[in-house]
Image (cartoon, rainbow, N blue to C red; front, side):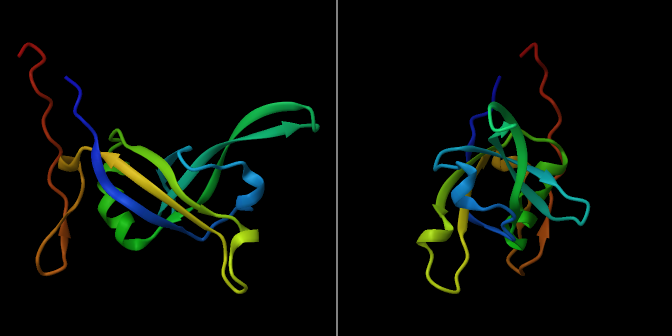
Length: 139
């Protein structure tokens, strides 16, 4: 039985953008991936079409940026365990459309099983529920 995906984060800003947004070919609705980085942050990666020798198109995975601290804290347990997440780009502001002094913006939406993410307590601390045991496939 497949679990239904529910919105975990409706719109999270991507920080430390490492690509030229206008030249990437990213669009709203494009798929993205989340992967843990060695420094403990969660990286946002997208598959882009690049041309080899200017002629041959090929797909490459490029890091777009990283999630902010609150979004990372919420999603980190699911990313580390390799849970199924659906990540889509839901907002883009390329360089030529930004105000002077402002940088480009990329926003993502994350969908998954809410039972597999960190839970926030009333005192501001977070804890991660233990992973659910797999259910008996005979049922």
